[in-house]
Image 1 (cartoon, rainbow, N blue to C red):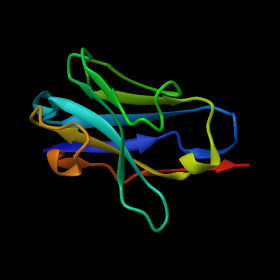
Image 2 (image 1 turned 180 degrees about the horizontal axis):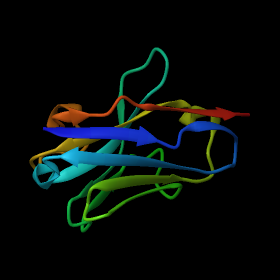
Image 3 (image 1 turned 30 degrees about the horizontal axis):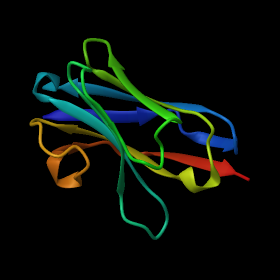
Image 4 (image 1 turned 135 degrees about the horizontal axis):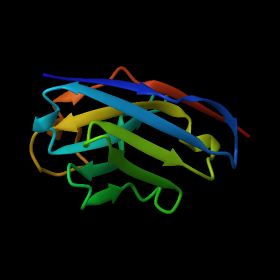
Length: 124
């Protein structure tokens, strides 16, 4: 089992920045990939970014490329999402997820473990 706890959400103005964190505990050695997803009210949960355990491969949704950056440290047990140039359409609950295998990083079904989410609100 892997436990994931997100933090760092909040309310910021458009153009601002936030850094989300995700602390992983438990059988973290099984996390081949970790990722961030988000879900806006009334919408499906969507892929944001993912990173392999080694950090060698990063994937981003087109909507966040050039603005968001994902990285891991603490032996791969802490995941971060640096979000810059935030837009109102980035408003959502952001979820951390962990996968034990290297499938398609953009698919929710590839991730076995999920955090509870952290709310991000961007005001215009």
